[in-house]
Length: 483
Ligand code: GLN
Image 1 (cartoon, rainbow, N blue to C red):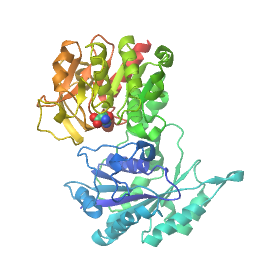
Image 2: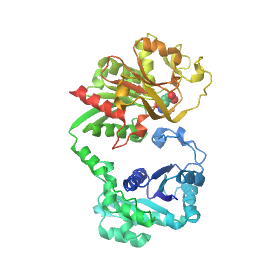
Image 3: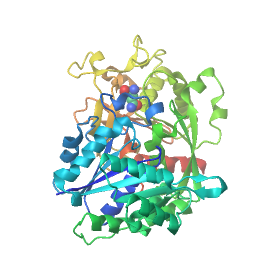
Image 4: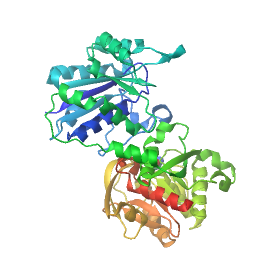
């Protein structure tokens, strides 16, 4: 039977519950346990998937493309899959918010459903420093009290602070919260990379504490991939400077998986990555792009919805294609590549996606039902994992070193099959297709150092110690460009 670990947060938002959950899961996996993760966004009757990234941050996509909730049944459905040792449930928001109450109540009921010894509550709090540099534990005490009012006594506290917590503060927090002193962990700010966090927890024996409290039978495995990763990260000598031309570039969180995946790709090349974030909209005034992208080693256009900034992105993409700047287009980025190519190379001046111009005479990107030759599909979002078949001899096939791949999708519009042949005849390489060949999954520019667009989102499956192949290949192209 799976044990359940609930991760909550108090005092304020943005303490890093996701990172904490991921770090704990990784420590348990390193000991051989099979772990599943659930992230709950505590909204009722709101489709979190359609919220503006400015308010909400990125919309992450899982293999099954799930966007729904139905609290306890959904959690059990994950935990009851065969072979699962631990199910981690991160409850978003801050304890005390009205919207999270039903979710915390669901967590509390687990104590009765499966027994206290099979449930572990991890609570993140903050010890702020007030003037004269004095760290304060009161907000932590209050936030634990709030949790206890709901009926949840935390087993582990991860106390966020700028510097490591002094022993006497840990003792004080333990005294006022009834959490064992050894389980009051100092989750201080790391100075290198967030991937050092599992090491900080391991140093304080968090994995041992969890294994003991949940009575997890030993699996006889102790692995540690993080030290090597952190060392490689710290030791990187080269830098790839990558321009991101998007529409939510002001908020770091809206493209967080892409930024992380670029970092994974950089570390795989023993390099660092420097990001230059540019709003597509700003490039619409005709300014000189050679100046804008001077010093950049590559360009990436990420996913996005709606027409704001599209013409600026098209200009940027044309600049990358014509100047030989390594280019990586993701989802919307691929669609922009296709529109730009149709305009400049096929000479279809008003080519567009029907998302931005429903009246376009040349809808090279459109909904499937708008493409007369395919009538059977609906206009709903294509979500979750799906296979692509890659053409031999292409950059994407070289990057993955295989011909069949499986990546996650989240989009509505497709490259129009009515224009596929024309585009190919004009040189655009269609390098990936769905297994039934009905949809374009990736394209590449001919005669270009590295210009690849994908309809799927490879950033969601990239991992620090197993970089997404396209990110590693893209960064490699950026570094070669530099030489
Ligand atoms: N808006 C585009 C579509 O729906 C691209 C989506 C995306 O980039 N995730 O197809």
